[in-house]
Amino acid sequence: MRLTLAFAAACAATLAVLPASPPLHAEGLNIAGARIVDLTHAIDRDTIFWPTEKKTFELVEEHRGLTERGFFYAANRFCLPEHGGTHVDAPFHFAKEGKTVGALPIERMVGPAAFIDVSAKAAVDVDYTLQPADVTAWEALNGKIAPGTIVLLRTGWSSRWPDKRAYLGDDTPGDASHLHFPSYGADAVRLLIARGVSVIGVDTASIDNGPSKDFLVHRAAGAANVIGVENLTNLDQLPPKGAWVVALPMKIAQGTGAPARVIALLPR
Amino acid sequence: MRLTLAFAAACAATLAVLPASPPLHAEGLNIAGARIVDLTHAIDRDTIFWPTEKKTFELVEEHRGLTERGFFYAANRFCLPEHGGTHVDAPFHFAKEGKTVGALPIERMVGPAAFIDVSAKAAVDVDYTLQPADVTAWEALNGKIAPGTIVLLRTGWSSRWPDKRAYLGDDTPGDASHLHFPSYGADAVRLLIARGVSVIGVDTASIDNGPSKDFLVHRAAGAANVIGVENLTNLDQLPPKGAWVVALPMKIAQGTGAPARVIALLPR
Image 1 (cartoon, chains in turn brown, orange):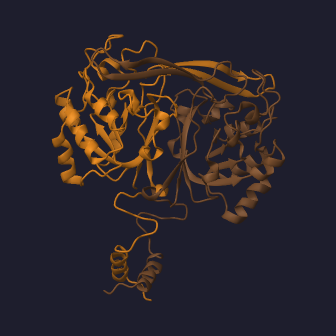
Image 2 (image 1 turned 90 degrees about the vertical axis):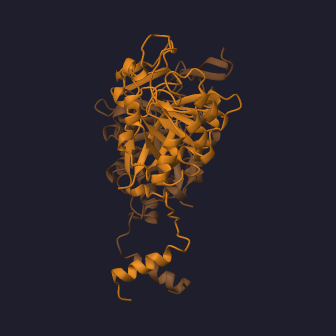
Image 3 (image 1 turned 180 degrees about the vertical axis):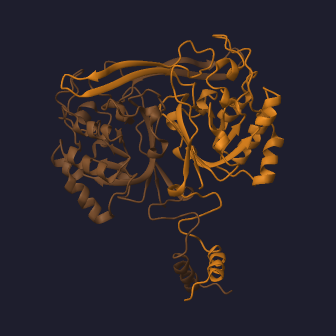
């Protein structure tokens, strides 16, 4: 059979109507060809925690140097609150009947990403909250958000990390009553929950915005067993759709949250 | 164009010689259709650490119950050594010039899995170490191990978790001199390093076996910037090849190791 590009194109068009194996539906991605982007801040002494946390990240050196048998060996232990740095909020964080980290279904931590960028609006209003109209505008361009989607909201705030005052709006120790930063709005999250999303993530310190006192987004997400992810970074590298996200928390059985490593897999 | 299966098959054979888009090379996997298996032990009071660790996992409740504003809220902080439970060994753990957790390239944490099962040999010899002949026998059946592969070694020991005495061979506090469990052997690991593997994982407490005193596997892996993963579980659910693994440690900047969430993506 003589091979020509025209023939190959005809073949491809024909094969497209056959069931493919493995399935390659619209949201699929071949992991072998994917470009990987790390959406996680490193954890160190500068990691930002909620202002009411009395203790933050502490690394204690247990050994560093030669052992008596003559080889190098280093090991540490560490302490931190569950809710700081890039981390997951389990539903139990704000919902008494919600799941703890250890009980979260692993299938909810892997999914196609819907990337929504409100950085232009947040640049004008530091307390901006995502509105239902932002979601429907995104859907008009990119298609309806499917069940199992991982929503990633970009405000642009990760560029302020790790400057606590710039990132949180206030750096008074122990005081969380004067915070300013953008995030999700409760009505938009109710719409996303109705769509069946698995995860809502953001590049600020909370899935509720800075001035929030009643944490309606946390409570709505928790009640629906939707996972929150906070303090993401590198979201500017994502396309509106087509990427897949893997958001894996440390598996703390009784955790209300946990440090997470979050990556995006992008089509080449 | 009339569609027949024979024609479609001819097309498929023809297209196979063209560059595919997205690439679908032999080790590819469509993430959309994958079955996900969690290879991670949950972290709780029973989590096994190295016997010389004086402190293990501690979860401190910071809040649990109604706030003054009337909604449920729960949060904890926690402490643990880097090396316990399902976790990553960074090369720096045993190699002074090796990378810390925060410096590990994210691309090395995602890769095709080569699953090697020595549980039958370990059932006879509790200190069994993987031999070069085990690797070449696996390759004779499954093909040469490619650069970037994540090797997962099953000994069957995860079924003993969290019984410290059964899992480590000895549960004397503070004493690591009488341990017994199987793992990698140094010659086999040198062969795997020569193949260019990214990660070596095992379902026991260490990538060196229990009686090891000089930790030759850790030192060889560290010197080659190969990542170790210890205390895996559910490896019996993996095929010899065809799965992909995502092994994501908590991003401790200066970590010699870190708790990790490790999952396998399996073709359906």
